[in-house]
Image (cartoon, rainbow, N blue to C red; front, top):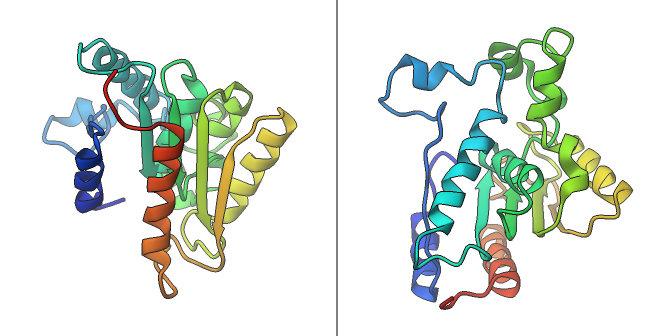
Length: 211
């Protein structure tokens, strides 16, 4: 999301979770051209590798339980969540992915061609950068949330991922919000329902508490 839900994160810390945000290369930050441009043709590849490295370092801190590391995100963050839990299944215990891009071949050409060129020009990048390529690796708890009327990240991509997870007999949780767009905010009670869904999934699958 453009603006992280700070009050929701605060509530999670009050319940006993440790909430962190780590910038990998390519994220908007005043760190220079090399920082921003190194992900060209490698969207999803460098970022997930660096998030995993950070998670391993964090997991070695004495107040962190390395067996209970979760990740969540929305849109690009949802894609990052999928890449993290599918590419590095031994690091992440739980993932919650909202409105992700599971297959970069289905996302907007104006974005994909700017950063990845075309699938025919960069086949390896599209394959290795797409979480759907690693569906068979799932080990942890995964929640996928998507609005069926998403006008940005089209729902078709999530349906493809679901089919791939089924093909590998991987069990997961899915919530589709009928005819909601990318922000999943239309309809009375939708926002509350979504964040209660995320909270309940996290508490159920990765309860807070001491090591």
